[in-house]
Length: 542
Image (cartoon, rainbow, N blue to C red; front, side, top):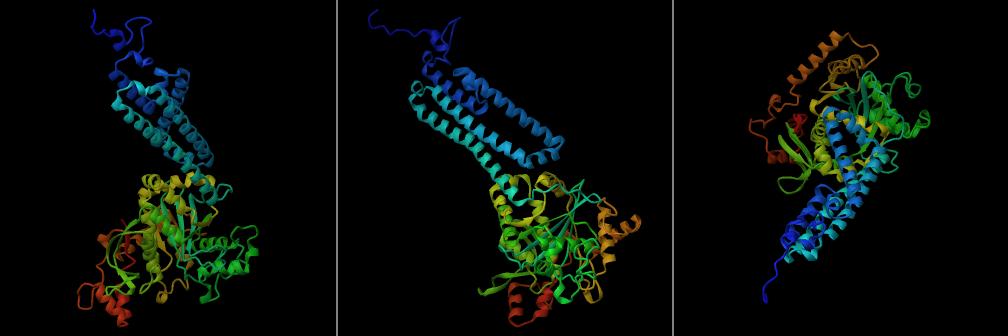
């Protein structure tokens, strides 16, 4: 009839009504406009959640099936990784720390990023934007670009990050053979100093030995004061011939001068060594503690500060007054103070807090260094690593040198992860843990006493008789360890602020203030300033 509007075939709206009917998914022209728009959004979601799915239902089935096989393989690997995370976390960590596994991951992530780009471009072709509702065209186009950048961009960045990490690890860690635990422990010498390129006069400003239980990851940190004298060496040390009585030339022979001495006078005793000074420091630390030191790491203090910044800072609770360089209450630049309390330090502040010894002692400084290290360990977690990866990586490259074998990185990372929940044992080879005549233990050390105390802590940690050459009977060792722990608590040097003594007060009993400390300094009352700082060795992580 003239003027009558022709009716659309219902089969074109709702798909094939029988064999050979039109398919609105592959032939969107056969569908109504709302169905075309719905079809476009479904294809986008398929490419996002099931890459290759859009091609199977609406495009090149061969391409789609190939992409689906890759997708299923990736999901299978993710499931396997999640299972390993639950049943064998160590194996998973060690696998991802292996540089060859990382290389495979770099290639795979890059290939997946490129492959997903191809699928997004092909999906965009399949959308047939000219057939969808006019108002949806820009939204679909924008969504496609956004999803492409989010997915392929994420994989591309992942490939870049893994490759950057792999290159950094190869630069930092040595390619040598794996080291074996001794008496169930790994013992590492950790040194920190203000190192410059080619600076032969480096004197390690902090000296610590981390003894790690090879099974549980439990860590004990032995700290050696930089002014420790008469360090001795074992008979199999190259320095035994040069110093059979130990490094004992008087006040000039404090332990942090040994590095310079060996670099200037005795490099020939360590032929083939990358760093004879570091090797000598390992021998000295081993002789002092009665331990076999297997590896070392030398860290620039600037890198230490950068690492803390890359982690987002570090939180510690201080039990005393600690000085640093900053603005005084009168606005002048000079000795400022942190009082008792909890602080969120950035890298520069944490370094100043750890290194401060004005109106204080080297031993109090060691306690604060141990506290900062414990706080870093407690706050370093997978979330921090993932979200701040690049900054941590850049800071890691500030390590001056180490002979830790790269092939065991996974083992050490796994142990560090285990050790996080166990806390850290600490022992300072000097006051307040050791008291000699007139407080001069670090000048005239009693090595038998040192070895007994070290033995006690190792026995308590489940690796008895790991230190010294003539270990005490286990019963005696356990008793010694218990006495040490009790004495530490009685002295108020534990990690629980509730056990700490109250901070010092002014002579009249009133609280110490910043203005009071400024007045003491301006009037030269050093004794009262030292009394105010007398509890700044009290420190706890968090």
